[in-house]
Image (cartoon, rainbow, N blue to C red):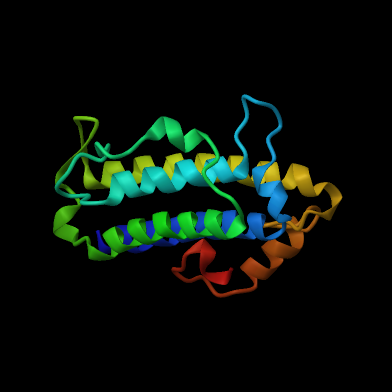
Length: 183
């Protein structure tokens, strides 16, 4: 199971990197842009993602993942004045998540934890959050890509460069490695 913890940490780091590389391409005011009143800005997505991380991963093994101090509804309004505040909150959430993952042991993985009184194994809870964060980070990246339009710098394989990427991958010896190791 140690490979599970190692792999899931790399997967979370990958999504953190995608979000950060998308936000780095934007002007500060673009972090607060909304398509319409029903849409979230990137700043609001960051507020929700980090708020969820803080709730879920604080006292992860001992307290319900939906903490009494969390105000989920408030996460969907802008709480920030500038990019520095956005990034500080983003990093606070990720720090909480990675501190928890770093302290987990293989023997913890089958323990039952609760989210809103619903039991999950630790593995199930981690997988649930990985899917949740990748969903919202995909939204964040999509917003950034729309805002940058033709100035967007891709975060993955460049358009019409799949063959080059595959040639590079297949030129290497077969090995056990994680797909993000080259990033």
